[in-house]
Length: 314
Image (cartoon, rainbow, N blue to C red; front, side):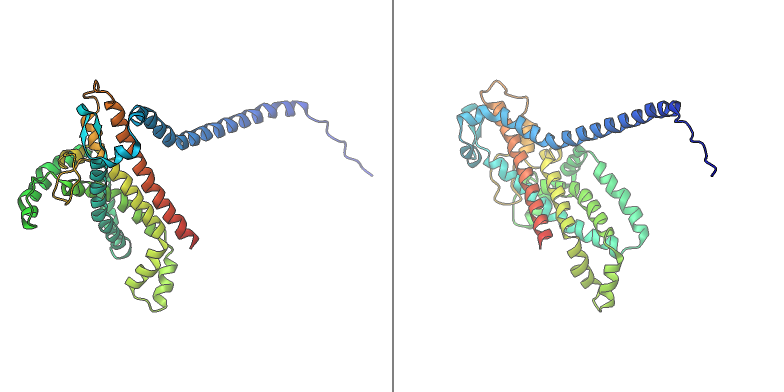
Protein backbone atom coordinates (compact mmCIF):
# COMPACT_ATOMS: atom_id res chain seq x y z
CA UNK A 1 0.00 0.00 0.00
CA UNK A 2 1.03 3.51 -0.69
CA UNK A 3 1.64 5.52 2.46
CA UNK A 4 1.58 9.29 2.35
CA UNK A 5 4.53 10.58 4.30
CA UNK A 6 3.60 12.53 7.38
CA UNK A 7 4.34 16.21 7.27
CA UNK A 8 6.73 17.32 9.95
CA UNK A 9 5.23 19.47 12.68
CA UNK A 10 5.71 23.11 11.79
CA UNK A 11 7.35 24.63 14.82
CA UNK A 12 7.53 27.98 13.11
CA UNK A 13 3.70 27.97 12.66
CA UNK A 14 3.18 27.11 16.32
CA UNK A 15 5.37 29.92 17.53
CA UNK A 16 3.89 32.41 15.05
CA UNK A 17 0.25 31.79 16.11
CA UNK A 18 0.69 31.64 19.87
CA UNK A 19 1.68 35.31 20.39
CA UNK A 20 -1.39 36.41 18.47
CA UNK A 21 -3.63 34.11 20.48
CA UNK A 22 -2.09 35.31 23.69
CA UNK A 23 -2.66 38.93 22.63
CA UNK A 24 -6.31 38.22 21.85
CA UNK A 25 -6.80 36.43 25.18
CA UNK A 26 -5.11 39.30 27.01
CA UNK A 27 -7.44 41.91 25.49
CA UNK A 28 -10.47 39.69 26.16
CA UNK A 29 -9.53 39.42 29.83
CA UNK A 30 -8.82 43.15 30.00
CA UNK A 31 -12.22 43.96 28.47
CA UNK A 32 -13.96 41.60 30.90
CA UNK A 33 -12.17 43.25 33.82
CA UNK A 34 -13.13 46.76 32.75
CA UNK A 35 -16.75 45.75 32.27
CA UNK A 36 -16.78 44.09 35.70
CA UNK A 37 -15.27 47.20 37.29
CA UNK A 38 -17.87 49.43 35.59
CA UNK A 39 -20.70 47.16 36.78
CA UNK A 40 -19.41 47.07 40.35
CA UNK A 41 -18.94 50.85 40.37
CA UNK A 42 -22.54 51.42 39.35
CA UNK A 43 -23.70 48.87 41.93
CA UNK A 44 -21.89 50.44 44.88
CA UNK A 45 -22.58 54.09 44.00
CA UNK A 46 -25.94 54.24 45.87
CA UNK A 47 -24.31 52.65 48.90
CA UNK A 48 -21.46 55.16 48.81
CA UNK A 49 -23.85 58.10 48.50
CA UNK A 50 -26.05 56.90 51.35
CA UNK A 51 -23.06 56.09 53.54
CA UNK A 52 -21.50 59.50 52.92
CA UNK A 53 -24.72 61.30 53.88
CA UNK A 54 -25.06 59.14 56.98
CA UNK A 55 -21.49 59.85 58.12
CA UNK A 56 -21.99 63.59 57.71
CA UNK A 57 -25.27 63.36 59.65
CA UNK A 58 -23.81 61.52 62.64
CA UNK A 59 -23.04 64.70 64.68
CA UNK A 60 -26.73 65.62 64.52
CA UNK A 61 -27.91 62.09 65.28
CA UNK A 62 -25.65 61.97 68.33
CA UNK A 63 -27.44 65.03 69.77
CA UNK A 64 -31.02 64.31 68.70
CA UNK A 65 -33.01 61.14 68.34
CA UNK A 66 -33.94 60.16 64.79
CA UNK A 67 -37.67 60.11 65.53
CA UNK A 68 -37.49 63.54 67.16
CA UNK A 69 -35.91 65.00 64.03
CA UNK A 70 -38.52 63.63 61.62
CA UNK A 71 -41.55 64.24 63.84
CA UNK A 72 -41.00 67.89 64.80
CA UNK A 73 -41.91 70.82 62.57
CA UNK A 74 -39.88 73.68 64.05
CA UNK A 75 -36.86 74.65 61.95
CA UNK A 76 -34.75 77.26 63.74
CA UNK A 77 -31.01 76.55 63.40
CA UNK A 78 -30.11 79.56 65.59
CA UNK A 79 -32.04 77.90 68.44
CA UNK A 80 -30.72 74.45 67.50
CA UNK A 81 -34.15 73.21 66.46
CA UNK A 82 -33.97 71.02 63.36
CA UNK A 83 -37.45 69.62 62.83
CA UNK A 84 -37.76 67.97 59.40
CA UNK A 85 -41.45 67.06 59.32
CA UNK A 86 -42.56 70.16 57.43
CA UNK A 87 -39.91 69.58 54.74
CA UNK A 88 -40.81 65.91 54.39
CA UNK A 89 -44.50 66.84 54.16
CA UNK A 90 -43.75 69.47 51.51
CA UNK A 91 -41.78 66.93 49.48
CA UNK A 92 -44.56 64.34 49.62
CA UNK A 93 -47.24 66.94 48.82
CA UNK A 94 -45.49 68.26 45.71
CA UNK A 95 -44.39 64.84 44.45
CA UNK A 96 -47.76 63.18 45.05
CA UNK A 97 -49.66 66.01 43.38
CA UNK A 98 -47.36 65.97 40.36
CA UNK A 99 -47.80 62.22 39.92
CA UNK A 100 -51.60 62.55 40.19
CA UNK A 101 -51.46 64.89 37.20
CA UNK A 102 -48.63 63.34 35.17
CA UNK A 103 -49.48 59.62 35.34
CA UNK A 104 -53.05 59.73 33.88
CA UNK A 105 -52.00 62.16 31.14
CA UNK A 106 -48.98 60.06 30.20
CA UNK A 107 -50.89 56.77 30.24
CA UNK A 108 -53.80 58.03 28.14
CA UNK A 109 -51.43 59.71 25.69
CA UNK A 110 -49.35 56.53 25.37
CA UNK A 111 -52.47 54.45 24.68
CA UNK A 112 -53.71 56.90 22.06
CA UNK A 113 -50.35 57.28 20.31
CA UNK A 114 -49.66 53.55 20.09
CA UNK A 115 -53.19 52.19 19.53
CA UNK A 116 -55.30 54.85 17.83
CA UNK A 117 -53.16 57.53 16.20
CA UNK A 118 -51.69 57.49 12.72
CA UNK A 119 -48.00 56.53 12.43
CA UNK A 120 -46.98 60.05 11.42
CA UNK A 121 -48.06 61.36 14.83
CA UNK A 122 -45.26 59.37 16.46
CA UNK A 123 -42.76 61.31 14.39
CA UNK A 124 -44.14 64.54 15.84
CA UNK A 125 -44.46 63.39 19.46
CA UNK A 126 -40.89 62.10 19.82
CA UNK A 127 -39.20 65.46 19.07
CA UNK A 128 -41.66 67.20 21.38
CA UNK A 129 -40.81 64.80 24.21
CA UNK A 130 -37.08 65.32 23.58
CA UNK A 131 -37.55 69.10 23.72
CA UNK A 132 -39.53 68.93 26.98
CA UNK A 133 -36.96 66.60 28.53
CA UNK A 134 -34.09 68.83 27.45
CA UNK A 135 -35.44 72.15 28.72
CA UNK A 136 -33.38 73.28 31.76
CA UNK A 137 -35.07 73.23 35.13
CA UNK A 138 -34.61 76.96 35.62
CA UNK A 139 -36.55 77.66 32.40
CA UNK A 140 -39.48 75.68 33.80
CA UNK A 141 -39.16 77.74 36.97
CA UNK A 142 -39.29 81.03 35.07
CA UNK A 143 -42.31 79.78 33.11
CA UNK A 144 -43.98 78.89 36.39
CA UNK A 145 -43.30 82.32 37.89
CA UNK A 146 -44.58 84.18 34.81
CA UNK A 147 -47.57 82.00 33.88
CA UNK A 148 -48.58 79.44 36.53
CA UNK A 149 -48.21 81.57 39.66
CA UNK A 150 -50.34 84.53 38.38
CA UNK A 151 -52.96 82.13 36.99
CA UNK A 152 -53.33 80.41 40.37
CA UNK A 153 -53.40 83.63 42.40
CA UNK A 154 -55.77 85.56 40.11
CA UNK A 155 -57.95 82.87 38.55
CA UNK A 156 -57.89 79.39 40.06
CA UNK A 157 -57.61 80.10 43.80
CA UNK A 158 -60.42 82.75 43.89
CA UNK A 159 -62.63 80.47 41.79
CA UNK A 160 -62.11 77.69 44.36
CA UNK A 161 -62.78 80.01 47.29
CA UNK A 162 -59.17 80.37 48.46
CA UNK A 163 -56.78 83.26 48.75
CA UNK A 164 -53.28 82.49 47.55
CA UNK A 165 -50.19 84.33 46.37
CA UNK A 166 -49.72 81.66 43.70
CA UNK A 167 -46.45 80.47 45.21
CA UNK A 168 -47.84 77.24 46.53
CA UNK A 169 -47.86 73.45 46.44
CA UNK A 170 -50.10 73.43 43.36
CA UNK A 171 -47.66 75.54 41.35
CA UNK A 172 -44.82 73.20 42.23
CA UNK A 173 -46.95 70.16 41.41
CA UNK A 174 -47.88 71.52 37.98
CA UNK A 175 -44.26 72.31 37.13
CA UNK A 176 -43.08 68.87 38.26
CA UNK A 177 -45.87 67.15 36.34
CA UNK A 178 -44.85 68.88 33.11
CA UNK A 179 -41.21 67.98 33.74
CA UNK A 180 -42.02 64.33 34.50
CA UNK A 181 -44.39 63.65 31.60
CA UNK A 182 -41.69 63.25 28.89
CA UNK A 183 -39.86 60.56 30.88
CA UNK A 184 -42.99 58.62 31.82
CA UNK A 185 -44.57 58.94 28.38
CA UNK A 186 -41.47 57.87 26.49
CA UNK A 187 -41.08 54.73 28.59
CA UNK A 188 -44.77 53.83 28.36
CA UNK A 189 -44.79 54.25 24.57
CA UNK A 190 -41.88 51.83 24.28
CA UNK A 191 -43.63 49.40 26.62
CA UNK A 192 -46.83 49.38 24.54
CA UNK A 193 -44.84 48.92 21.35
CA UNK A 194 -43.28 45.71 22.68
CA UNK A 195 -46.64 43.93 23.00
CA UNK A 196 -47.05 41.37 20.17
CA UNK A 197 -49.77 42.36 17.72
CA UNK A 198 -51.02 38.75 17.79
CA UNK A 199 -52.40 39.25 21.31
CA UNK A 200 -54.58 42.11 20.14
CA UNK A 201 -55.71 40.21 17.04
CA UNK A 202 -56.71 37.14 19.07
CA UNK A 203 -58.74 39.27 21.49
CA UNK A 204 -60.51 41.08 18.65
CA UNK A 205 -61.22 37.80 16.84
CA UNK A 206 -62.95 36.46 19.97
CA UNK A 207 -65.44 39.33 19.88
CA UNK A 208 -63.89 41.83 22.28
CA UNK A 209 -64.20 45.50 21.44
CA UNK A 210 -61.09 47.58 20.80
CA UNK A 211 -61.29 49.27 24.21
CA UNK A 212 -61.87 45.93 25.97
CA UNK A 213 -58.77 44.61 24.25
CA UNK A 214 -56.74 47.53 25.48
CA UNK A 215 -58.19 47.32 28.99
CA UNK A 216 -57.99 43.57 29.58
CA UNK A 217 -55.10 42.52 27.34
CA UNK A 218 -52.67 45.36 26.69
CA UNK A 219 -52.87 47.03 30.10
CA UNK A 220 -52.60 43.67 31.85
CA UNK A 221 -49.52 42.74 29.85
CA UNK A 222 -47.85 46.10 30.42
CA UNK A 223 -48.78 46.73 34.06
CA UNK A 224 -45.28 45.97 35.37
CA UNK A 225 -43.74 48.37 32.89
CA UNK A 226 -46.31 51.03 33.74
CA UNK A 227 -45.45 50.77 37.43
CA UNK A 228 -41.74 50.98 36.59
CA UNK A 229 -42.38 54.16 34.59
CA UNK A 230 -44.30 55.65 37.52
CA UNK A 231 -41.36 54.83 39.79
CA UNK A 232 -39.06 56.65 37.37
CA UNK A 233 -41.39 59.65 37.39
CA UNK A 234 -41.45 59.74 41.19
CA UNK A 235 -37.66 59.66 41.34
CA UNK A 236 -37.51 62.46 38.77
CA UNK A 237 -39.98 64.57 40.78
CA UNK A 238 -38.23 64.01 44.09
CA UNK A 239 -34.91 65.17 42.70
CA UNK A 240 -35.97 68.39 41.00
CA UNK A 241 -34.82 71.51 42.82
CA UNK A 242 -34.58 74.84 41.02
CA UNK A 243 -37.97 74.86 39.28
CA UNK A 244 -39.82 73.86 42.46
CA UNK A 245 -37.80 76.25 44.60
CA UNK A 246 -38.89 79.17 42.42
CA UNK A 247 -42.65 78.57 42.68
CA UNK A 248 -43.45 76.58 45.82
CA UNK A 249 -43.18 79.42 48.34
CA UNK A 250 -40.47 77.97 50.60
CA UNK A 251 -42.34 78.31 53.89
CA UNK A 252 -41.51 75.60 56.47
CA UNK A 253 -45.02 74.45 57.37
CA UNK A 254 -47.24 71.43 56.87
CA UNK A 255 -49.69 72.44 54.11
CA UNK A 256 -53.35 71.63 54.59
CA UNK A 257 -54.36 72.39 50.99
CA UNK A 258 -52.65 72.80 47.63
CA UNK A 259 -52.96 76.60 47.66
CA UNK A 260 -50.62 76.94 50.64
CA UNK A 261 -46.86 77.31 50.40
CA UNK A 262 -44.54 74.42 51.15
CA UNK A 263 -40.85 73.73 51.50
CA UNK A 264 -39.56 70.48 49.92
CA UNK A 265 -36.26 68.92 50.95
CA UNK A 266 -34.42 69.73 47.67
CA UNK A 267 -35.37 73.39 48.04
CA UNK A 268 -34.07 73.39 51.62
CA UNK A 269 -30.69 72.08 50.48
CA UNK A 270 -30.42 74.47 47.54
CA UNK A 271 -31.46 77.52 49.57
CA UNK A 272 -29.33 76.99 52.64
CA UNK A 273 -26.22 75.01 51.75
CA UNK A 274 -23.17 77.25 52.11
CA UNK A 275 -24.87 79.72 54.44
CA UNK A 276 -24.61 79.98 58.23
CA UNK A 277 -22.10 77.13 58.36
CA UNK A 278 -20.73 78.60 61.59
CA UNK A 279 -23.89 77.49 63.40
CA UNK A 280 -23.22 74.24 65.27
CA UNK A 281 -24.77 71.16 63.67
CA UNK A 282 -26.11 73.21 60.75
CA UNK A 283 -24.14 71.32 58.10
CA UNK A 284 -25.07 68.01 59.72
CA UNK A 285 -28.75 69.03 59.62
CA UNK A 286 -28.56 69.75 55.90
CA UNK A 287 -26.81 66.44 55.29
CA UNK A 288 -29.54 64.74 57.29
CA UNK A 289 -32.11 66.42 55.02
CA UNK A 290 -30.23 64.98 52.04
CA UNK A 291 -30.25 61.59 53.74
CA UNK A 292 -34.01 61.81 54.22
CA UNK A 293 -34.49 62.59 50.53
CA UNK A 294 -32.24 59.68 49.62
CA UNK A 295 -34.19 57.30 51.86
CA UNK A 296 -37.54 58.48 50.43
CA UNK A 297 -36.32 57.77 46.89
CA UNK A 298 -35.03 54.34 47.94
CA UNK A 299 -38.34 53.57 49.66
CA UNK A 300 -40.39 54.54 46.58
CA UNK A 301 -38.20 52.46 44.29
CA UNK A 302 -38.36 49.51 46.69
CA UNK A 303 -42.16 49.68 46.80
CA UNK A 304 -42.43 49.73 42.99
CA UNK A 305 -39.98 46.81 42.75
CA UNK A 306 -41.97 44.87 45.35
CA UNK A 307 -45.22 45.46 43.45
CA UNK A 308 -43.62 44.33 40.18
CA UNK A 309 -42.21 41.21 41.88
CA UNK A 310 -45.60 40.29 43.35
CA UNK A 311 -47.23 40.74 39.94
CA UNK A 312 -44.67 38.37 38.49
CA UNK A 313 -45.49 35.81 41.17
CA UNK A 314 -49.25 35.90 40.44
